[in-house]
Length: 122
Image 1 (cartoon, rainbow, N blue to C red):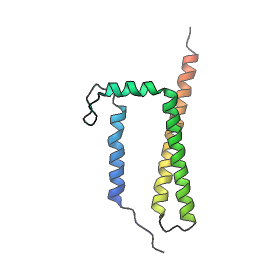
Image 2: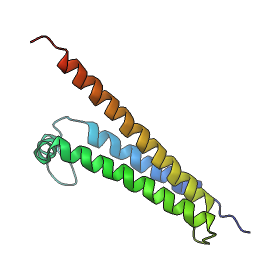
Image 3: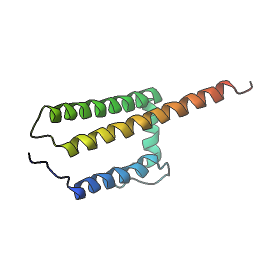
Image 4: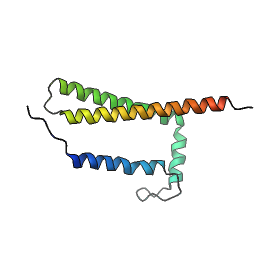
């Protein structure tokens, strides 16, 4: 049985790409985006127009998709699919786990914020 090896450079490259995307999404400064020519403030306003519920729903759907993909890879590996190696399965499962934990933490923060607002004196 030939077990494929992980291309470490490819995994590191993917991690760097994800890390590079994080500050762009979280930074709310009024700087011009070189790719689209829109300011980040305009991008945030567009995100607000879509609604918080839609954003939360999309995040939950993405977590669900990651879990589904990890499950399919795991099933394929256990059935002996030659196109699926253990490293793909493990990476997909870890991505799924991290995204679920992040979603759980966001939910906990939202519940805490809701309770704080409800306990505010009128």
